[in-house]
Length: 350
Ligand SMILES: Nc1ncnc2c1ncn2[C@@H]1O[C@H](COP(=O)(O)OP(=O)(O)OP(=O)(O)O)[C@@H](O)[C@H]1O
Ligand SMILES: [Mg+2]
Image 1: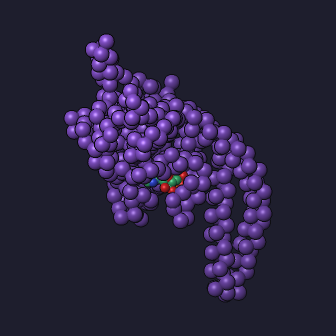
Image 2: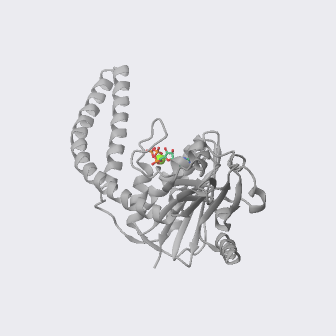
Image 3: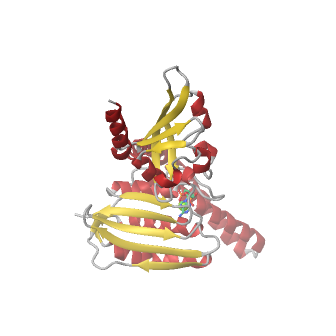
């Protein structure tokens, strides 16, 4: 009987698609499932019988998978944690409990966790599109109301500017220049707002992604020079055509490239490369920067409207991009491994 149980537990730890950690009373790792090793990106031989304090020494306390209190009998059910190894990020759902001997004394504890990354991202996608739809409605209504008065303010300011010019009032003319500049900024913001609502004049046509990128490389180049950034554009020959709106697609690439450049205040390399994924039938564009990277606790939020870490950012850039790409049936994904960031934009082709 014991033999069978032993075999089962061996097979369980080896084959089961779950993370399992077995912990002894000295808070050492007694055993671990193969899948857990994969998710933690650690090797069984290196961590077995080591103290969990040692194994997770570099992980901030709020992201620990295990707390010492587990041995006091704290039961955990469906605790959601995110975990990032060197390669991948996981959303985990975690249960734990103590193991007792026949007298009821605690002799150890176990933790079981499941990788729910796909489920989580689906759920987040639904939430996000709900929120975007709501913001879109509000934005569309408000934006028009803001634009109209702006147009007349701008018109009168331009008249004033001319008058000041005619009378040689240079200082006043400079002031109006500043005001006009600020009005342009508000206008640009309002336009972005409008983009969040369902765009009304989208013109889908068959286009080549390479041509779109070629068209905007000079603009990106200009921005790159300001930041001392080198731009590498790796075009791919014979990309299949996609169905998209050129202007919107340009906007996506510009936004993502601008973010990449802004992430490299001390210079770096921005690489734009094209490829085809023939299995999924997508044209993919990877935009990689050698910048600061995105901390794992921030990654979840970057597509949210108004999320920004920049003093002068609106936080609308990526949410607009996501909306546009989403409407084309594509995806926009991010991978950031501490140093540097890659955004991958995929657009389906027929
Ligand atoms: N390549 C990147 N490297 C590091 N962080 C990034 C990168 N791209 C985006 N981010 C993070 O995502 C946040 C949101 O980006 P988003 O483009 O939506 O807004 P923003 O750039 O802050 O403002 P705006 O686009 O209006 O100038 C940024 O503030 C930044 O923290
Ligand atoms: Mg941006």
